[in-house]
Image (tube, rainbow, N blue to C red; front, side):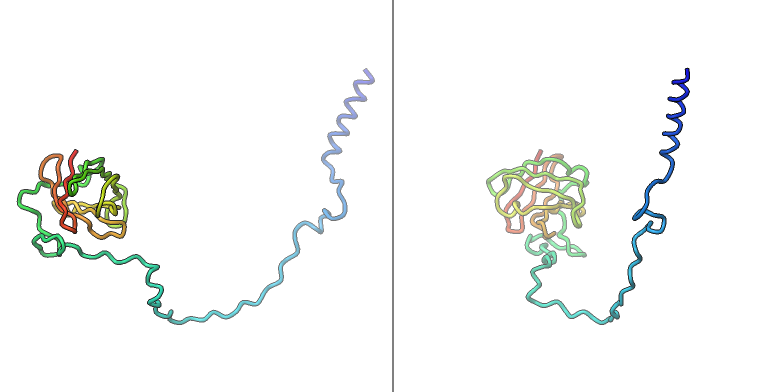
Length: 181
């Protein structure tokens, strides 16, 4: 039994010895943190107007959207948008979302329209298209028309709902465009 008491006492001494501070030297209480930094002088701040941008650097900014309504040959209404044809049906943005088959100038391709915001419109794109529609990057509904836009926000084509799953219109270049499902 004596060996048991010796072992228990030794274990208690070892456990208590782990609680003592035994380090010396660099980790002493006086050397707890780094030395404070010395203050540095700050130069004075000045104000003034910026110089105008140079004409040689204008390419770093995207071109402003151009009003393309005159190129489409549609009658104008107040506000600059072309008037909708009399036979066009009402259209909602939500009804446009999804995949469309595009007929454009004798060829066909696919168009995908989403509700993800992109500039003043929603993100969209084409696959397998030719001509102006290869530049399509967004779209929007304006009144009874659907406006297809390039990646800079310029109108590429305007379409009007002519049936439940059909839209007809033309590109800025005068090519007929039809969307159907």
